[in-house]
Length: 573
Image 1 (cartoon, rainbow, N blue to C red):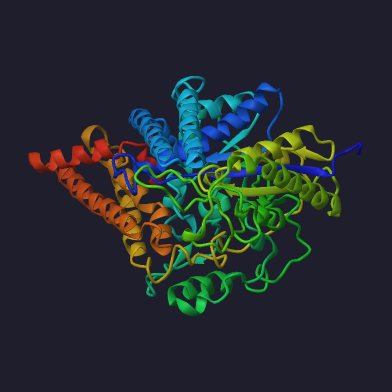
Image 2 (cartoon, rainbow, N blue to C red):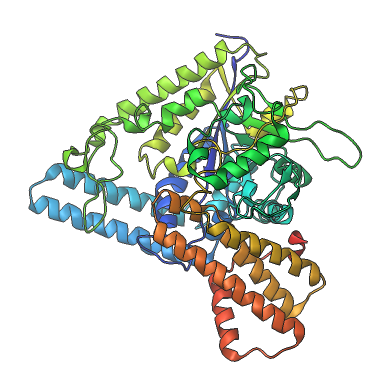
């Protein structure tokens, strides 16, 4: 046994879904929220609750985007979720009966597994969770089991927003929403898509004639609101051009790269192999009476993360695990296993639940050994070295059905270990006072390492509309700084439509073809509603009459998009 751990470890889990309440159900819309709650959030809560009951602290730093929290705590969600869980149980019952008629006892047993699974989720939701998933995680944080961090209010892609006011609003509103739901200030933030931009003279990539202006770095705005750290991908810490061939394929992206790298060329983009992802770095340590606490970065460890993310090498690709893609209709339950990474749907073999428990333990043992070996080989003081493994929370349970049980096995080993210490993000910041100060380049964790997934040939058309709306919001927020009554209400709804318009989900869904039609529909809807409400503001401010049809349309928008009751338009001013 070692007298001191080799280092510390934390999962950083990022939970996010776009705003889907009152915006469709299936195949796109509310079903996304119901699936994530049933397959990921509640199973993960159960894992963490088990550790709490054992008196153990979990090595989990979990983020919930404010827009997700708003939905999970909306009264309409609970009623919809009840119906969803009842439907899933009933479809599993029908499947089991049909399989028994066909004398397919193996599939009938899996159908009963699904029925039991959703009945258990319903019992947890209506029992110990008291129909409040967010409240369940809040109690875990209040008791010190986990740490919860925030995210951009609606997951806006911060480096490409046109104004510092727009970036500020995404972060300031996130902190205000966190405070309302969790009863404290957040210490950390997950930058949407792990996308970062330093300060430099920024020009719009969709307006070649833009003269540009000096932008604040993302970290400056994060720092302004008392946030202490965020997570970056490895290539941002170590430098190098990770964008590959994308610059040659899209002129707008090349313009953005050229202006960011020209301003800092020779300082930030050379390879810096001496920088280690296994320690903390400060982005700024300037001190002064008017200077808030500095901001730190935690860096993704690519070695351990690959074991989970990789479709070819990662644990979820184990042939025994439940296959995500092949579904039985009409119920939509899954009865087949991965089989092989290269197997098409017709080659999938039947799922055997009894075959996975040993694989879960073996994969967890392997991951723990990898953590231990990685930490023991790093030439950094043990008190400062750590491994950070960031993932989308929805990977566990939704995409990888056995994922929550794998996490439980890993967390239990870490909780008992004398070699690998469990930590939260804030723990790593609080014990790294003398860490080095660095500068990092612009980029994200998306394919190519830069902005390509969100800014490309298929999505370029969205950005002039977003930028025009952002500039208009700032103009109106300043012009009507003292607005009250109906005018202030209109301005608040205008801001909500802007926030929904800014969501990075629309460009992602378009670029990946995951739900391109839905994303384009939603983007255009919020853009058109922004313009409509702006016309009402102009009339209301001028004292001009507004007809009843226009008010009825406005009230429908307001009822549909009712998130962030604490929104203050001064955030844009």
